[in-house]
Amino acid sequence: MKKIFRKYGVSPVKNISNILAMGVVLIGFHACKDDEVYQKEQYKNVFALISESDNVARKFHNLGEESIGYIAASMGGTNPTDSDVTIILVEDKTLTDQFNRTNYDTDVSKYVRALPVDKYDMESHVFKIPAGQIGGRLPIKIRPDGLSPDSSYFIPLRVDMYSSYEVNHEKSYVLYRVKTKNYYALSDGSTIYNMRAKYREQGSNSELEMPGTKVMHPLTKNSVRIMAGNEAYASDVNTFNRAAIVLTVGEDNKITISSYRNVDVTQVDDDTDFNNTFRIEDDGFKTYKTFLLRYNYVSGSTVVEMKEELRLEFSPEDEIIQ
Image (cartoon, rainbow, N blue to C red; front, side, top):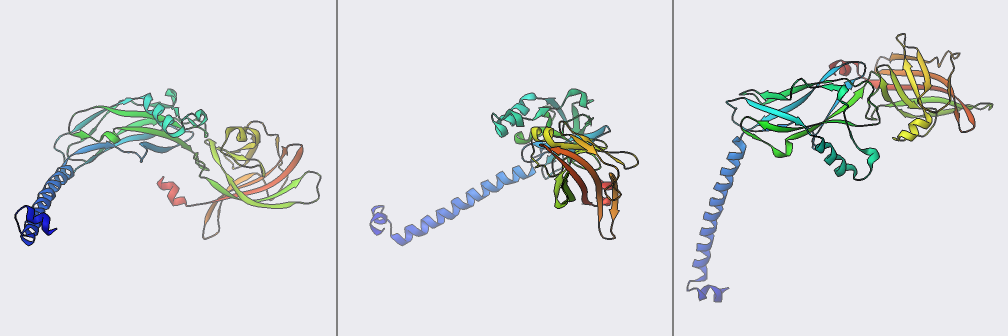
C-alpha cells in the first residue's frame, strides 16, 4: 500500500484522509440525489386500476338477480390533485389471451373465457377520479344466471386514454372476473360442508358410518351441486358429469334431489331423520346451514343407499354485511 501511495507523491495517512473526505462528499451527493428522486416519486400523482397482483379483480355475484360490480381506480401521491382525471377504458381481448398463455400455456381446458355479452352491461367506458379525491369507479351490471361454476369468465379492460397526471403502466389494465354464489355456496370451490353419513350397499345388512367433507358449488339461486355418496371429488367436468347430483331447495325448504348429468339417483322421502330438508341450526354457540338427505344412487353395478347430513358453520352477521 505504501509503495502505491508514494508513487503518487503523497503520504499514506494524508491520502487516506483525502479519500475518506471525498467519499463522504460523494455519499452525501448521491444521498441528496436519491432523496430528490424519492421526493419526486413520493409527491407524484399516479393512478392505477385496482386489482390483485395478477391484475385480476375477482367479484362474487348472486345468482338469480342482476347486481353491480365496479372497476375502480386509485390515485397515489402525497399532494392532493387539483383537477379531475377522466379515464377512458376499452375492452381488449388480447389481455385474456395473454393471461391464458402465461398461466396455462397449451392446456386449453383451463383457459379463461370471455364473459358472454348478454351477461353484462356497461353504460359507459368513461369515469373520473374527481379533483382532490383518491379514487373513482365505473359500474358494470352483471347477470350471472347460466354461468358454469366450472369455468372462469373475464371482462378484459385497459386504459385507452386519460386526461391528466400519469398512469401506472403495470396497473393500466384489469381482468374483471365474475364469480357466482347463492345462499348455500360459492363457485370457487371453497365451500366445504362437514358430512355425517350412513352408507349401505343395497341388500347388505351392514350400514357403515361415513364421516367426511363435501365440496358444494352453486348452480342457480336455489340449487347446488355435490358428489353423490362417497364418490371421489375432483375439480374436473368429467367427474361431475359422471357422479354429481343436484340439490334444489324449495321455498318450504324441502329438497329435491336429481342427477347433474349421468348418475342414476333416486330420492327417498320416507325417513324421518334424513327427511330431505334444509334448515338453519343454532346450538347457542354456533350457527349452521344444514342439509338432511336420503337417496339411493347407482355406483358401477351397485345400488348405494345414502343417509347424509351436511353442515356448514356460518355467521349470519357476516352474510348481512356481504
